[in-house]
Structures are given as C-alpha cells and as structure tokens.
Amino acid sequence: MKTKFKTLFALAALLLASATSASAQQTSTDGKNYPHIFLGLQGGAEMTLFNGTNEVSPIGALEVGSWYNSKVGLRGKAYFWKNKYDNDDMRQTFKYTNTKVSVDFLLDLTNLIKENRKVKNFSTVWFVGAGINMNWAKDVAYEVTDEYPNGWAKQMRWDGTRHNVGFSANTGFRFQYDILKWLGVNVELAGHYNGHHANNYANNLGDWQLTALAGVVFNLGQKSGAGKSTTPRYKRNYNEDVVRPTPPAPKAEPKPVQKPAQKPVAKKPAETKTAAPAKTYQETVFFSTAMNEVTAEEDAKLKDLAQWMNENPGAYIYITGYADATTGNPELNMEISKKRAETVAKVLNEKYGINEARIHTSYKGDTVQPYSMPERNRCVVLSTKK
Image (cartoon, rainbow, N blue to C red; front, side, top):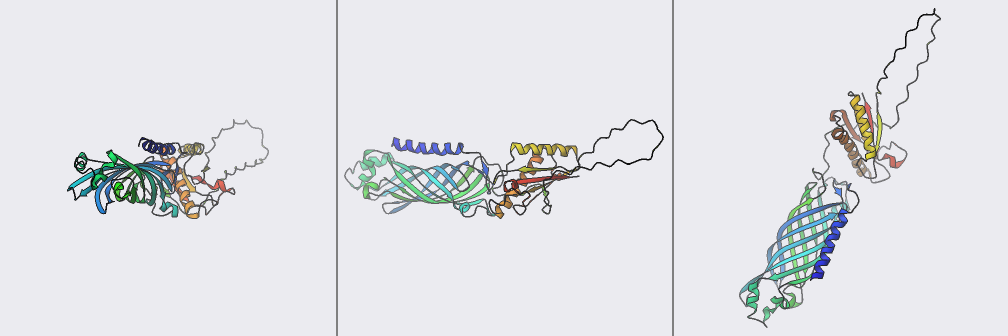
C-alpha cells in the first residue's frame, strides 16, 4: 500500500512542478493566461452497484490541476463518500467509509472544436484517469461478522485487515461556466470502476459507480474580470484610416530674398527664435505571434510618446491595431488586433497618465498590411494630431 501512495504522490508532485516550471504565461483568445493552476471543490451524489443493489450516498471531492494551454490539462482529484450495505440474514446495516485519489487527463472539447467563438466562458471537458481507492468498515461490522466466521458475511472482512486498497479508473464529462476569469462553476458526470471492494470477495468483481457532482473552481494567476472579452473604456474610431509609420517630411528651407542695394546701415544683432514643437508624432509598437503583451523595449516607445503628449496638451493619439495575414485566420486576427490596440491604450492611460479622452482606438485585423514583411504587421501604429 505504501508503494501505491508513493506513486500517487509522485504524480501529484510532477503535476505541480510541470505547471510552475512552464514557460511564461500567454493570453489565449478565451481571455485566460496559460499555463495556470486551478483548485476545485465539489459535492453531489454517488450510486454504487453493490451486489445487485443501487445504494445512493453523498460524495465530496477536492481537486488541484493545471491547464497547460486552452485545450489540454492535468489534475489530481480526491473523492470521499460512504457506502451502506444491508445484510438481511444478519439484519444489520454496515457503512463503509471510502476515499479515492485519481490523476486525470483533461481535454477541452469546446476549444478543440472552435476556439475562437462568441461565448468564450462556457466549456465542455472530457476527462479520463486512474488511481487507487481505499475503504474500511466500522467496528460494529467486525463484531457482528465474528458470529459468522464461515458464512456468507465473510466477504466483509478483507482477508483479515480493516483496510482495502485497490486500483480504480474513471471517465466522464465536465460542463463549466466561468463567471469571472478566476472563478467558475461546474457540473461533472462520471463513471468509475473501483477494484477490491467487499463484493470482490463474493463474486471476483469490483464496484461500478456513477457520480454526479457540482462545484466551484478557482483559476490562479488570472486577473479579475469576466471570462469573456470586455468592451474597453476608450473611445474608438472604427473609420480611422491606416497611418503608415513614416517619419515626417523635413521642411524646405526658404530661399533667400534678393534685396535692392541700400546704403550701409548699422546692423542689428540677429534675434534668436525658439523652434515650434512638431505637430505630429508617429510610432509603431511591435508584438510577438498571437501575443498582445507590450515588451520592455516597446514600452520605452510609449514612454517617449507620453512625454511628448504631456509637452503638447492639445494633441490626440490615434491607435490602430493590426495582425499578420500569414498566421491564424481572419476572425482570430481581428480579435488579436483589437486586443493589441486596447493594451497600448491601457498602458498610455494607466501607466503614463494620458487622459482617455485624448486616446482613440481602432483595429483592422489582417485586412490591411502596413508593412511588406509579414512579421512586422503584428503591430500597433500610433499617430498624434493637434
């Protein structure tokens, strides 16, 4: 039994280690960051098919796991319940305490079939796994069965030990709705095989079990907010033309004007004029594939832009998001270009203090490609006007 528990704990340690040592989080189209760890608590009912009877009992469960991306995950889960066994010959009712620990593979069928969908906070998950189960009886069961050492009730005694450990397997479906990015509710229906229970000694079979559970799940490492994309607070200009990231043309120097010859006069010292501030400011912020996070290098560009806008309080910033047409699909690219524009607007407003009334956003997806090189179209183009 110790060997089985050591194996189980090793699997659980591997689960957590793989989640924490994974690469930096990335934001998927469902609005969540991956990879991330989740914790769950559930309660419900179980029905064990025990020697021809269908006993229904309450059951509880705890889980911890990790979603490595929007489609694949792994979890460890512990179940707790009691089975009631009625023996008409002895006119006794026995209650057996049960616990089971399982390691399950998770597959999000909803994201697998169509990841970029309108309702992004609902998912259907299929799971399959295996583990160990253990049960034991109350002392009264042993006191009564001592009176029948050779009778039919000997199946209750687990070959002389009060603990009974065996192999288990399970599979089922989970239906989850994310109220917030970090909080969801779910319903789970599953079938289980639990080996080496009491009836294993009567008919050489384990228990077949059905469970129905409902509960809550906490997604760690997620920012608060709804599970679906939210509408930004910034004003948008969807008809804003694309501004190509070209530097302003240099002003032409005025030609000297020929004056008629005059009598020599005393020259006045030349006056020094202060150069007028530039009327426009153009910049491009670049992103990695399918990402909308601003790197430190690109953030420096936004810092310089914010400083210029503080020096020119009458200027407005027009932000247009783009996506690379050679990756993804039109619907997905439109969504990522929107998120890129919103992220840049948020940095300017919340980090550098630019009033949101001076910020206007739009997004073009992959319908317009401002650059000839595909990878440079994963960008946001910014232009200011006074």
